[in-house]
Length: 529
Image (tube, rainbow, N blue to C red):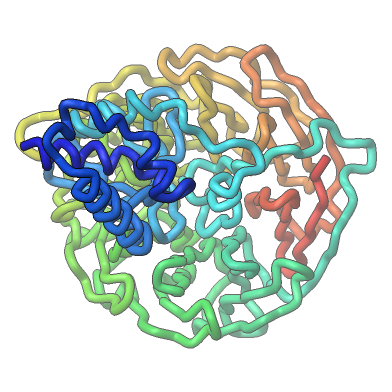
């Protein structure tokens, strides 16, 4: 027993072993301690060297001081290996090895993980640290790595001059379409129609020069923002007509493809065609074919093999993109389809719940907001509206929802520019064919300020970074608004360099730059302080 205690004590000296060597360790030992009574100095030193060698080998293997740990949910059914990033309200932020960030409600974690958080909760990424850089270096999918529209960039301009920030570069060659941008490893990915073909275009992050482009076949101007999977080196794109194509990030070679209509009998809820951005979740690609046989589907991301499909009567696809929720203690995919908000169990694709009240009959567009057990959704047009749902457990692997509140389309509605949660509040552009800035308290639905007239006209696509909201209006006006519940504070606006029709593509903020796609053109603005 004394030998075991001695080894444990020696192992507690690991930092000393790494920095001072055995001589200092020997001097630090209290050889008269009861722990070592009866043991020779030679035996003690052997134990020290054994511990030192063990620590050295563990260090080489990456076990000691490894950034990643395995996190488990309270049921023990799910686990993920990821690095702790920080705590935000009641959620823990974790980064997987592929660079993707995930958020899990603290209450859903195992008791062991909650104890770990209690000991380490002050460990947060420091400004300018390597950890923060790893989080901020990519924008690999629609609305960013967390699908929340928030960039982790800091030290950005807090106010714009009359002419706006300087243009770093501009380029052409994107093609026609409203697709936004996915950015990974120094490359920008987007979609556009050129001549008679829909193209997936890959350009340099440095100057916008085309690296490669691949035809996905004939079709109309696309809306889908490509999804990049850093782990596999694959990128996924979806045409208006429902052709889902997987390609190599390196050279644009096609790997596999699916046809929503032919493979799933999929249909859109209305005439504007498929617009979602697929979701990569581990080895799966989650997509929305929109059919009675498969309103949602999980595919093997590397082969396209169908792993499961979700039956739903009248399950036509909407225009939103799926996001992950752990509401009610069950991992699920939440999105907005023709019949409104739905939750689909991640393990087998079972339809858990459907909330139709905010669905309109024309186009259900905004991607829902997930916050712990809460789901916030909104849609525009004459019969939409907004609602907050709270998910709770309803038996083994089942979930029920409770409507916390509902707002009519006249009270609060987001057309298609998106919504962003920052802390306790949600920010958006309100109104059909309008983007009137509005701030509401998430938990209660109370409108804190707005709707305001805003700097531009028409619908507004928004993103957020460094305490500010970036409103891009349909009339090509770009506005900087402070993200505060204290009141509407416009911090500057400018006319985007070009206006090729409706200015709808969502803005992206990354590495001190503001990227604005405008049909065939792409503009990069410098917004660092």
